[in-house]
Image (cartoon, rainbow over all chains, first blue to last red; front, side, top):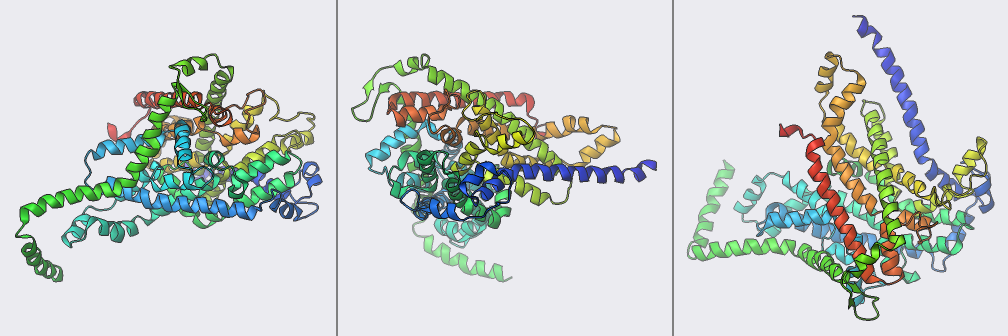
Length: 285
Length: 322
């Protein structure tokens, strides 16, 4: 009896303490990001001397000067990144869902074998195959174009998403297929009319993650893009850093923040889908 | 009633149509079904053979050659693989990479698990905490954050500014110091504990409250509940996270490249394996040697995966297996 009366108080205190720790942790986690945002609005000489978050002097100079610092404007780089990411999204959504449908529902000889091959290819490090891939794309004359970055997505090489969509299609009842067959609906029609609308959540997760990964990808873009006019944001930032060193942190930060804006917007809008996507499928994000 | 009617209306028509060439059309139907299957898999097949299996075989061949793109590859047998053992940069790259994997993965998973357990206690504002803690994972791999990290741990970065506030002066740059540079990257990796945390959270929710209640009745304390219930039941999720994070850590590239301006310095202290492959392949155009290193990496990852799957039966506990 006594136990019941005493218990609520310590738990409430504990929860309060826990909340305090979690808030402190969250602030610590976000501090670098907020600091970078603040620093991008500070005059260059104040960034190093003023550790506070709120700029004593507020300026947009970093954004204005950073925008044109590389000759080609960051607007161009932004557009280039957008092209690569959007192309990747279309490719992945289209071909990964096709392959997933075949693995989940269609008749293919040695289907289990090919499925195992697909699973293994998820683990394959990109660095292990990049040299021959580079030589192949060079042979085709694709270096310094976006083709080496986009075409592989149209060939379903991001096998992880195939797996994700297969898992999703497997949850759909088999009766659907049979009903469609009886009604004389062919496999292709069935895919477009029935499967696609039903797997929209999986496709959305695929699209969001593909966009974020393509937007932040550095290695592939570093290897295939050498001409400043077709640079994407990550490559432009790296060139900016190499060119100016540590003397223009304000401008570097301003353009870094600029490069992160689409990801944050996507996160704010699709938060639920993103977090569900990771929680249920183990996407590494 | 209407469904039955519709079906009985349709059935005779279909039967009538397919009756005359029944056998032929059945075989044709079968072929057609397979064709449709392959049609849907076609992009994936092209990608698999042209962009994955082809390059794997190609890089195996190249690993036995000396090739600088300008002239044709020259067969040199296993010399690349022998050279590795005398290449100080290579040996160092292995050391740095293993150090990074061994430090960053357990640290990241421990933080992820700690926060996940704390969040799983039915607190208010769970969704908000979850989102905030996930943000670093969202942006952490980008060049922008690597640039930020370079400033944070630089000579007059905010870490040193903070230290000087509490009276510690003259620490110098953490990134220019070969003894500490790798740890700044470990911290960067641990900072991005958000996605394993989300996966842990999902796993924790699967554990039924009844278990804990039963344990409480038996007089189990919080610690023994954690070690005897939570950890064993969560072991499949830990296993999954471990594999994914180790594979990702072996492939880390961007932060080391940006922080060291692409050279893996100071004194090779951030020369990740992938960075060295990049230097050899795309800096010096030693395509043969780079391919040999790529194959060695492939072997290591295959070996690691095999070992973890084999060992998993001893420490991963599947509830439905009993």
